[in-house]
Image (cartoon, rainbow, N blue to C red; front, side, top):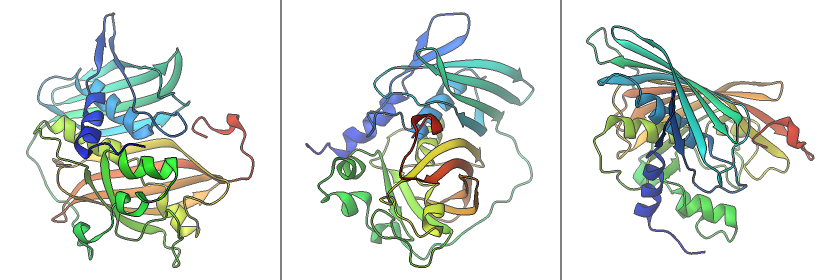
Length: 301
């Protein structure tokens, strides 16, 4: 396979944010998808596009502060997605939106978002220090670029976000300590060259869906190659505390406090390189290890 230029990979993600307005009585948009192994749409992509669609409908000057998404059915990357936004409330300083994503008439994702005017008020954020510099850690390209397999090549060269695991990757080798925590550095593969805060927030939303299952995989002594491992996002929440800049390294600190009943919970905090908290993420997903999986068990399987 030919190796795409990193800037072209970044551009392909930003192009997805150019949603097309659809005429009609509702606030409706249409979007396309990046190809993915297996043919399903990446969940982070749908959430990022959903954020863009909702943000287009709120009064100027209001920024996202929280989102909550529920994944219902699979979506095919080869077919367009329809994003329909409903206004729940426009208050004095907050706006609330509800969104549905459909494909061929099937509801595949619902998402709520809340937006707020920038205001002065009490302020404190957690801070964290990392023992690892992202510049000294191997990238996904370094770890998978020489693996002669289509999935490895896709992950190495076609992901628009650079991921570097400060706790050691789980592509081939399990965590010998079986920790339920990890820390991952991430940033846009190449600079996105815009100061538009919504674009940075959308890229962060996209990237936040890459690794939430890994604390559970790590805790259970597994790898991504464990036979019968099946994971799929059920719901994903985000809170944005301050401005984000995806052109610089962000540290995604994650842990899994519980995995029960075929489900896994992950809690994550995203910090700047200097150590200030900028976003919080909670994700619950289906987590199963089976030798046979029925298509009806979950849409993303």
